[in-house]
Amino acid sequence: MTLNQLNYFYQAAMLQHFNQAAEKLNISQPSLSRSITALEDELGITLFEKSGRNVILTKAGEIFLEHVTQILDDVKRAELKMHQLATDGGHIDIAYVSPLAREYIPQLVRSFLAISENKNITFNFHQDITSANVEGLKKGSYDLIFGSYSASEPNIEFVPIIQQEIVAILPTVHPLCHKEALSATDFADCPVLGYARHSGLGKYTRSFFKKHDVSPNFICESPDENGIASLVAHGFGIALVADVDTIYRDDICIRPLVSNESFSHTVYMGYIRGKYQLPAVQRFIEFVKQHG
Picture 1 (tube, helix red, strand yellow):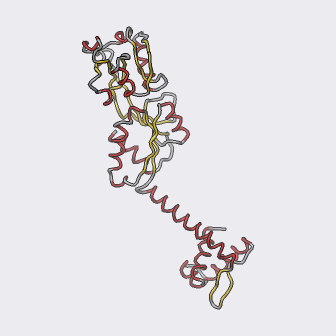
Picture 2 (spheres, rainbow, N blue to C red):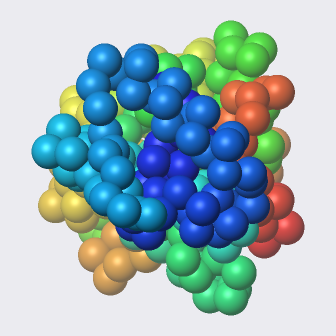
């Protein structure tokens, strides 16, 4: 049974005339008759019976017509959907780390959708630490991820998109606030709040202390700057965080690191290298590269 046979059957059933159906299909009447006969032989049942110069459906033909109509409608919908995916439609699944959730991702996607050719594209948003997002990307759950670089993933293309300075944050009443800049040793004698140790920024900031031979007293971990900043503001300790909007608040003191110890964190966009991407995903990747 082929799609052509189903279409021939449908036209013959609608017009109740083989000659007229053949003309509409731009084939010969004998070709149409042979196709219908072959279909009946395959199904083991008679679909049409003659009525003068016309043909009418048998009871089995009427039942078959219901199914064929649904099949052809599904085919049309599938063709339309594929056309949308190939032109101005499509769907994109992205995953990102929580620090990007407040401003960066919403603004980026909104700017992308503001372009007329992208207005019909839809998104799903997922938030987790980089390692979890990498696994989701490799499993095909996500088209793109945003977060830290992972050197152990050679099949992922990592594109740098944001450079964030790492700064110290303290309660406004903390004695270290009088200093213009902090050093690694300033963290040695204070309770310290940090990112979740298995997150990209958690590993990155801890490497800073290891490099400078400092072993801070980490008393708490949080997945993002908002959680860390709230605890710092209430006097739980001090922290080393990325310089993002959420740390700028009246109850927090922000200080850079001394010049010879200052460092920054790069945020990357990641996608599977060499994998076919829908046109919508391709356009979004290029948009991020240009505007990220």
